[in-house]
Length: 215
Image 1 (cartoon, rainbow, N blue to C red):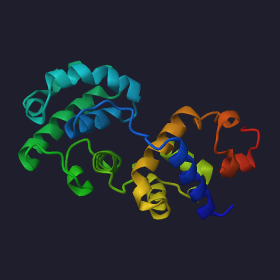
Image 2 (image 1 turned 180 degrees about the vertical axis):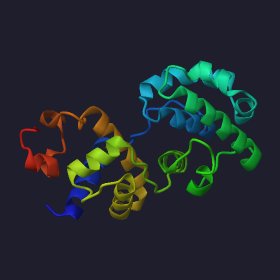
Image 3 (image 1 turned 90 degrees about the vertical axis):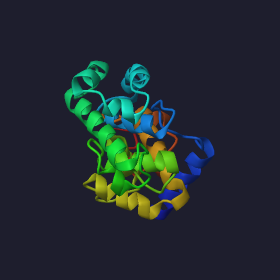
């Protein structure tokens, strides 16, 4: 199967069966999403959603978070991965947001990456989720699933996966394809033993072509 045919099959399937895919992180505004995404690095969305209600109640806006201390923030996020670093990042992010961006979350990747704790992946999440920009955030799920299906070829780095996906996906589908790949990787195309028996993509999956028993 040609790569362009895989992309078409991928987009056609999810457009029909999961047209409203979205992040599983809970948030009510761009500031809350930014906080949640920073916290979600190497941690589950489920855990972050358990932590953020109290965190957002105490720090409902960038100003309150910027005026806090790393020690206080730590008390609210101590159950997530790397809480010390993330507490520092959150306070630093909020201070930069207040002092450099008028407390408004930037809408472009370059400005977002000027804030502590915000790398390219986080910036891509923000612009794609909030603004439906054609940006592809590549986490472990996206990296794994894109390579397994055959949407990417010889992609050894997240940036390589990002570039190939952005190049080949329809521009208006890039922001939602991010969620398709993440959710598929989280629940079906899992890392150690993909659930090929129940996977609806086996008809065009390169991995399944090579491992028809899903092994």
